[in-house]
Image (cartoon, rainbow, N blue to C red; front, side):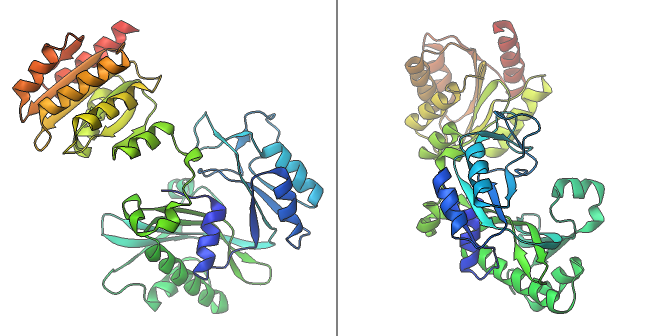
Length: 399
């Protein structure tokens, strides 16, 4: 689960992380009032969407020369003008895709005189099973570009969970950022507080870009992106309330109601699979045959008929889907249960796209019989390769 920048900063501030003063605004009048509560004479007006690259982004409704989603304002009137221009508009960034995201919230913060910018992040390193601290002197830039052009400028420090964060970790971060003296102590202190926040909230990512040195020689977090482990939200009811459903895909929201692992993609062949590894293999073999998957959807190992029906309806609710491939290997999951769900969903939504089904495993004979006797135009497949070839061919014919 992700949250907005203003929510992230409010959360980090509770752990003692230094952030500039700021207020969220849902309307132009609220933006003006927020600016009046700050000392000025410089304010920053920031679009709040769940995507990076806002400063370099462009608004669909505005001309190519218009400013992006992060703007400086030197008066309250400028704050108002920027708020009027940004709220309700669609911001397109490198992370949103061409469709962009509508700006429904703004964050008005104090302007800060910046002497130097850094990058600092905490993430879960799945290769080592540890929390990794990533630090770079190249703050304010796309970290992916830095990794491509100058990988030697990115430093990774892992923390052994048996010991937790130790003083040497803070010194290593300061050294990676090229800081000494009081600034090195501040870097170690900020790192410790971010680590406390990471563990205390079951975060999956805390990204600070930039972490800045101000002109009065203080370290301050100027932007923050925070994401949490959704599986741990039962322990953090207060954090779960920060979820902004308007920033999420409606189909992904619907899938979460049924505990389905669903991610929308850009292709036109819908996939319903049980097991994440099998789902990845299914998407790979679709691409191998010259087409692209429209989604990742894992129904899990013990799905009911109702859950399968819901999954099928979610796939079909995507207008981009031109065909569906169901690939089930029944271990815990029974093939007859899958078949019943497919038939029920296909009848309920009036199936009008090609459907190829590959079933294998527990009760496979009963499952195939249910599909064969359904009276629906379902194409059976013998194995995964056969299924991929058939659905790609069916979609091409339908097109």
